[in-house]
Image (cartoon, rainbow, N blue to C red; front, side, top):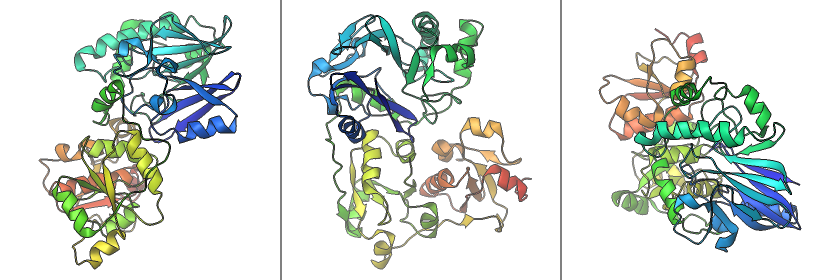
Amino acid sequence: MDIIAISDVGLGNRSYVIDVGGGAALVVDPPRVVAPHLAAAREHDLTIRFVAETHLHADFVSGGRELVSDGLRLLVPAAGGYAFDRRGLSDGDEVDLGGLTLQSIATPGHTPEHLAFLLCDGTTPVALFSGGTLMAGGVARPDLIAPEHTEQLARAAWRSITGPLLTLPDELLVYPTHGGGSFCAPAGGTSETTTIGEQRRTNPLLNAVDEDDFVARLLGGLGSYPPYFLHLREVNRRGPALVGPDRPALARLTPDQVTQAVGDGAIVIDARPIAGFAAGHLPASISIELRPQFASWLGWTVPFGTPVVVVMDEDQDEAELVAQALTIGYDQVLGRLDGGVPAWHADGRAVAMIPLLGPGDDRDGRQLVDVRQASEWKAGHVPGSLHAEAGSVVADLADLDGDVVTHCGHGQRAMTAASLLMRAGHTGVAVTSLGPDELTAIGWGP
């Protein structure tokens, strides 16, 4: 039996294409862009017959309806209240896949409706698809519903794991959905394949002495998450619009069309490398360099449902940008500036700049601001620096007087933060691509 893992490095997730025999495949937790799943099925001479979704995802738009049109073959938690044709499963339900059997196990915790799926050959368990309930080194966060439900769901997670899951055989392979890099996952958790026994022995959350200790550890390790998470559960419950396997080309927009779009409420996202943005960019545009984490920062900085215009270099992968935007439900990418910043400048329009400082540059008295996540800051930072996560930097620095220089580890988040500050009206903003160790070494501390 082949189990093909398809990773979304940027969102920190994995989905799976499983050969269940007879040329049929089961797919677990696919995101909206399903071209990799279709390609994997073709490569292994499989036809996708079933799709199973462990829960209503908050970090990506589900792709189940992209893969199967027959609702009887789209397997979802019955408690999710889905508003489209599907087969709802509850605890203990079994589905005959044509040789193997899929058994649903109620595992609330990450979400109230969460199911894990146990794949069996006869009566023998062969694989557990655990979604967010259990991952290598962690447990997915329980605080994505509402604050008043967080502790209740954390306690449910303890019971889900120590009850049905840890009674499974130690050697049983576990295939999680969320993992390292996912804002659904705690620090240290990964989407790597593991086993029940390995997690029993090594998972720090499962080493808790009792339920109260588990809850304290789980809730104590939660960080911030992108605000688009607050919208996607409902998008997935209602049923996202179908987009098909092909990514449409972006419209090419003139400077006048970009100006009109901005006047109508669109936000300009500059996806070029940060050096290009620093040297010249459209005023009030936001820097989000195109990389695997592009979608997370798009969803962190642009309000959900807001139209977007992008600026790119000609050699950047437009299809990748569109795919990442669609994966998190950002369907209104109106187009890209034709000819990029050179065309904007040639049309006689102003560009803005941000100093990008290197190891030989002086920060000229600017306050150093570390824009990494709180867990990174706690692990080590430049003495005397301020901390403001990139996603909340405008609010966190609202009362700060004076010039600043932002930094992270490589410069991308620092440039995003700087562009947000400039968009909010701050002046005297600079960026360094150096990390905290390098900055300390060159004497940028107090």
